Length: 73
Image (cartoon, rainbow, N blue to C red; front, side):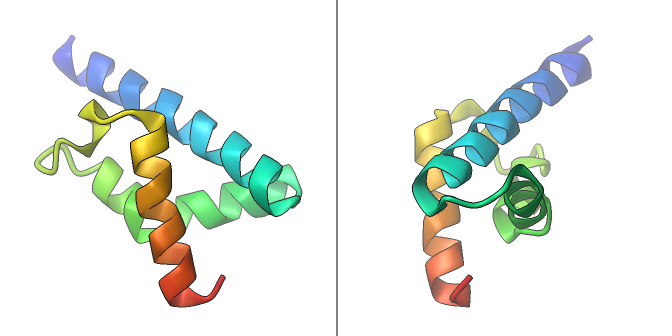
């Protein structure tokens, strides 16, 4: 039951990240999905030891934007 709740939190944040990327970078949904799912941020979001899933979507998005800036994506 706890794992289901954690996965739900990750799923909600992931959906928000995709939407933020589409709006901010004017890219397609497919591009945004690829950017999120191949990111280190997504990897850490799914690592329940990091507790990143407890943060707001906007906080995680700032983390993702920094990663994208470093990787020049």
